[in-house]
Image (cartoon, rainbow, N blue to C red; front, side):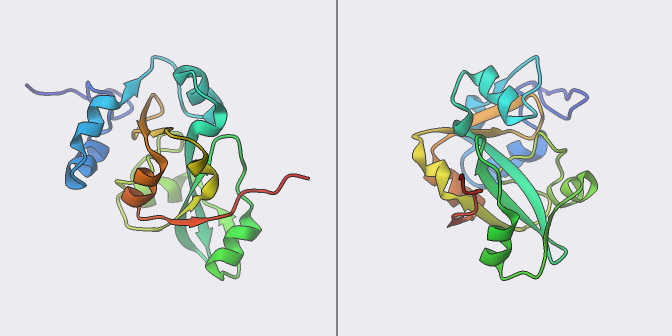
Length: 172
């Protein structure tokens, strides 16, 4: 049976075709069946948590930064912010900045708000904040701003090829 894609690139299942292909390549194609597609946007962590009905910290944000001009993916819980100084220290970089939308799409193949934690167009260094490990399950984007999937945090880290770090902003 042929599948169709909507204006956001999602197939009938709600999974972006590139992400579905990546899941197959990783041997976790069964994850596709767990993707939840919503009529309203899950582009932000707040929107995703409301749609899923979970805690904000159970959302995994996939954020692209530029460390000395080289893209790096940071996986962060939805309730926290990335401390770019801590990322800079972790990478021993001179300067770390938030990547613009063009760099995000060029690096990952996905638009901001739908960037999954793995299955990107290019291989990048990945840092995962330890805060994600506080939950049994976290939810991450499935390649579009309307679909998310549940995954065990250690499995997420493994499939993303991430290094566990502490790069979350410290609260006063």
